[in-house]
Length: 278
Length: 322
Image 1 (cartoon, rainbow over the protein chains, first blue to last red):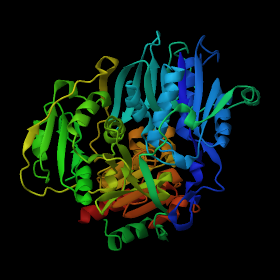
Image 2 (cartoon, each protein chain N blue to C red):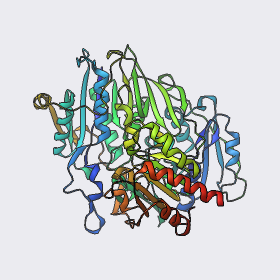
Image 3 (cartoon, rainbow over the protein chains, first blue to last red):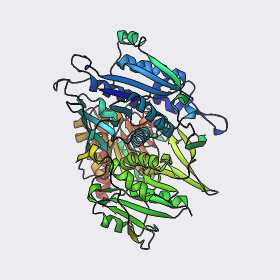
Image 4 (cartoon, chains in turn orange, blue):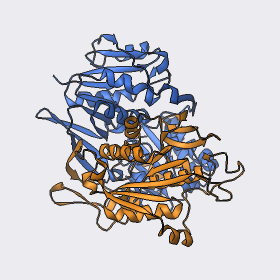
């Protein structure tokens, strides 16, 4: 089985409050923020690895392969390299500026990559934590005319690898969908829980550690020898015109901090007489 | 004249309140709008929408649409959307899943999870939060047809405007992927509490509650004395104390209640993104340096295991006194 994961390089989401707006609101400046792989995409890599390995022995299932693809500046190779250190086999980087991309163009470009790579599954993070658009997986599935399951918190691959049952976290509960592969899955936080991915190879008694796996030094060294193929985005033959245009950026109005109260009695008094919410 | 088609959201054939936010979006944009209800046995849901000011309430009713599946809904929605300039839906999990597929099918650009709309010179400009709400972007869609998903917390539920829009049946387009995607079931989390996105008061807990039991025995009594919805930080969800459905934040629910009480929540950026537009924010945390205090209207530095039961009792008393 072949899995394709798309990975975006984003500015450190834990310091997103340090972004600045460039002159005249023309640009968001992320200078000084460490670039990191979008956390949901990292979870997509983790989920994919759990689908193609025996979790207990760490042996890769024969014939299975994981490819990571990115669209962005050349430096994105660093983030792809991290995914290779986690266990992905190879990387593809289609070079362009971040400003020259929108979710629609990424989806159309990905569709071209899928046509060439012919994966059985495309797994993506449910959203990138910079643009917060939450659209690429859905759009890709529609372009390919593939079934999809967004916001996945569990995936069970059938023993014959022809279908997958996906638990989707939606408002009010969990929807279960059965997809016939090839298909698109976008992952939510809980996809990296100890038993959220089932592939009928990893023993049912095995528990993964919560979260994305750590990359030990030997894996990091090994990753340096894995191939990353770089090409300009134009080589995919997609129309690079964007369907969205950002006209201005601004910082949101700052919220004024309030007061500290000394005890519960004072809090209740303030909520009653000042905020009038009691 | 350009018009908007608003997609209603139904669950179990009943209209979801989320729909009313997309209607507010349509009203704010100043363009005339129609409504589209997709589902099975949704006649009553369509009836509920007749007084909201739509030109027409369109209904696509078919057994194949009884449960929402993006692949099944997309062709029918896209067909009904022909001739409209804008297709709008609320950015609930339903809208977020459906809108990008519909946009592709229509060759339309997508403005997702927007917080405001401005109409000037015949063009719509959208505002959308990015970077966990740390930047607001103004954006436009360059295609003739536009698809929009509107953030529920930023578009107040529309009140009925009177009138009786005519109801019209529209064609159901068969799902070309019917054989490749199957709805197996919906495991609903039943709760007597109000919906997180719609509650006037939200009481949210963090990892400092230490366990699922901490939520149950310490936080829940406070939630219930307020008649509030319960929320949680991502850290508490990650730790498995509560279901992800309760997560407030950039990647969970975005809420803006009248009163938000953050208990044992430090105030990580991605949590703040989901609650900073609340009217009154209360924070209870034993770390005086916790970032949550920078935006709380009222901060109490205290051990939550003592302060929360005390607050619960005090509120109970106030309520009893009326």
